[in-house]
Structure formats: structure tokens, C-alpha cells
Image (cartoon, rainbow, N blue to C red; front, side, top):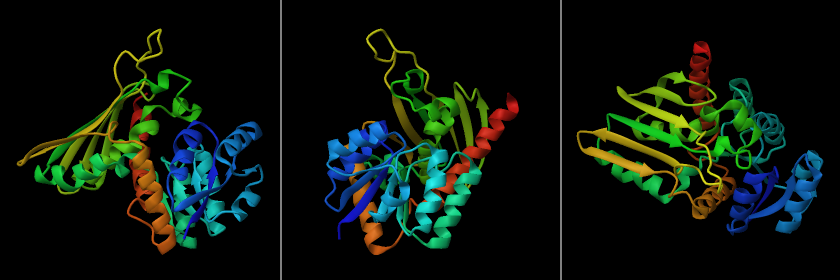
Length: 300
């Protein structure tokens, strides 16, 4: 079975990540591109040899599943109607623009029982999977730390408007919290401090009495040649009686990781069985981030 995947969105992530990944996965085919900018969707459709759609209902009629590459608030609205149309969902993170939106998506998936999968791209990388399966457990971790350092939000050429408006916690917090949660146990509580528009620090309490801390900053300025003053970093480290284990979450994420994501999505659709990284995972992570953001805004 080859799954006909429609791509909702025609921006940088749609064109640079999703479209090439679909093209590189034999289990899926690009059924069409939908978006709100006729010029962008037409351009992407021509480059990928597929159809451009401006009416979402027409777009849904011609696909088995939808991969989203739109802002979170837009995704939440579209995902609900897509689920009720019986289409499988490959969802970006965060799940919605707010917790209420994320809950609506989760409710729609639960009601319709469509397959859902979350594009937590770090988790599809070989290095990250080896970290979670082998190296982290050997440390018998009791605590950990994570950090994201980037210049993305300082450069409008690379950041989406919603990322700039919501800050680094919403832009990168989902992936970081997800990996700490996977390595140390389900997050039960979170505290946050810092500047929503600048540096953010979070403290996480995990099941089993484990704790972790994370730092996020994405406003490193760029030099005249366009490069940031420091290299982007995204890393997680855990510690325990068995020692320490760490993983570089940037170098491990390549086009093969995105191909794996689509390969597993196609398998889930074919078997009609949602994977571990489904909408429920997305809702849990959104709840953690919502609590962290509430804590941050309380201090402003």
C-alpha cells in the first residue's frame, strides 16, 4: 500500500523538510499541496510534480492522510476537520496554538479513531534512538539536563512568525521536554524562569523521583557574513550510578530521520495503529509547556 499524503502548508518547513522526505519514502506519495498563498502552493506543486489546492475540502478528498506544516493555531483548526473526514494525521509540534486547541485535536482523534503521529524529529534519528535504548539506560539515570542554543529567532529568514511571537519555549521546548521525559520518566511538574522573549530555564520533576533542568536561547546574533557567533546546539545529558550519557540532537537529525518518520507513519496508516508518538504524546507535552509558560508570564 502506498499512502497518498497531502501536504498542508507551502513554507520553508513544508518545502525543505516534508516534501523531500515524502519524495524519498517509497511507502508514500505526495497527493497534493494546500495552502493560503496561491503563489507558494503553485510553486511547490510545480517543483514536486503534484497538484495545488486552495479549497481544503477538495484537498482532503484526494488524500489518505495529511502532513501539516502550518502554524500551531492553524494546525489545530485544520486537524479537527481532517480527523472528522477520516484522514490520518502527521502533526507538527506544538500540537496547537494553546492547550485548548491541543485538547480539541486530541478529542477529535479519540472520537474518530484516526491514526495520528507527531513530528518529533529528534526521535526519528538513529543517534537519539540509540541514546534512549542503550546508552541512557546504562547510566541508570536519576537526573539530567538539556539545552538549545540557536540564532534562529534572531534572523527573520529562518524563523516563522509564530516562533518569533511565542519565543524559544514554544519554538523548541517540545522536542527538548520530550527527550528528557523519554529518558527520565514522565514529567509530573514544571517550573520556569527567565524571559519569554529571550533566555528560558525550566526545572522538570519526573516520575520515580527524577529531576532535570533545561536552558533555551535562540537569539544569538549573526555576523556580517550571515553566520551566528556560536554554533547551534541541541543536546541532552543524563546522570546516574552507572555514569553519564549524552546525545547531540542536531547532528543526528538528517534527511534519513525524516524518511524514517514517513516510513513509520505509512506503516501506522496501513495497520491502522497509532504509534507511541501520537496525539496523546503531543497533548502531554503541550500541557507541560503550557504550565511552564504560565509560570513565566506570572513573573513578568
